[in-house]
Image 1 (cartoon, helix red, strand yellow):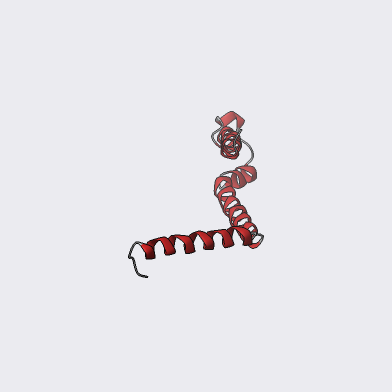
Image 2 (cartoon, rainbow, N blue to C red):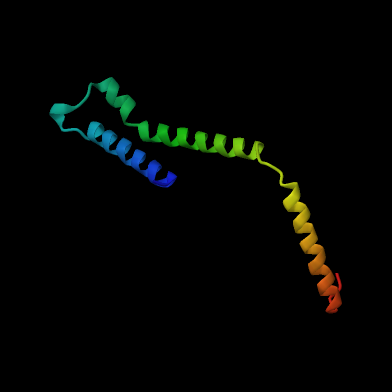
Length: 92
């Protein structure tokens, strides 16, 4: 299962549990303090997901590896392409 599928399954599970509790029939309603905490729960989860996403992107950006060998190889390819284009009459 892909990461997207895992997130969607978790979201569907949480969403169905929230809907069952928040939209319960009058005889099965939770007490008022629980309902007050339960109704804005999707907004809180959305904010928490945004914080998690920003933290993940920041961590991956901070630990990004430099590929010195690939950079040198790319510079060689660029030099070879420029030399070939100079032979064909293009000036830089």
